[in-house]
Image 1 (cartoon, rainbow, N blue to C red):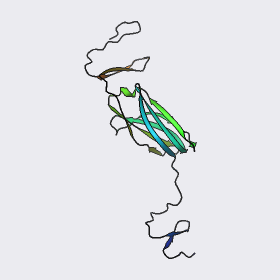
Image 2: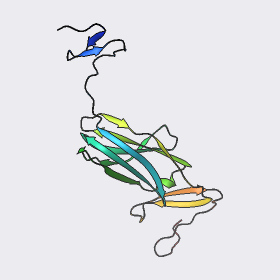
Image 3: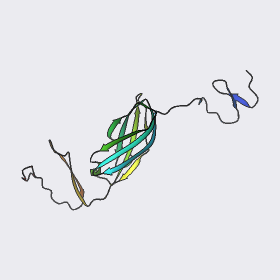
Image 4: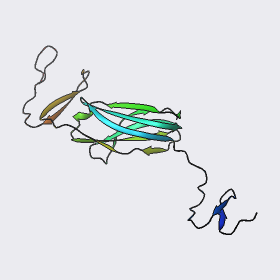
Length: 171
């Protein structure tokens, strides 16, 4: 077929005005697997609550909630199943238990969205400032089953005594 002067053709042979840089075959649209509308974290007692909303999901498998104390080296806090397919708004939440007991003044969070085909993307990183405490002793898990983890935050803690259920000193 004849192409008018000053035009070129795309992959399908349709006329296109020449003059702009054409970076190749970008005809058609690529659908992103998940459209994330928002992602935020809040503090509730010693737990951090992560909340996010999606507007569309295609082939989504799960969301992995990750945290870091330095904003660089992230660890898995947990994961939540994704809807898989959705064209409507969906709200998600995840509770990172005892996260405020971590030895830091700022926690950083991000989402890793995993598709069923193994492809993943990261959300933006959000920061949460933890309140300063003068003295705090936290233990995990509660109730204690077979041992516990004691975390000490603050200055000036000189002695710690542990008591069993009968009030007997165990330390």
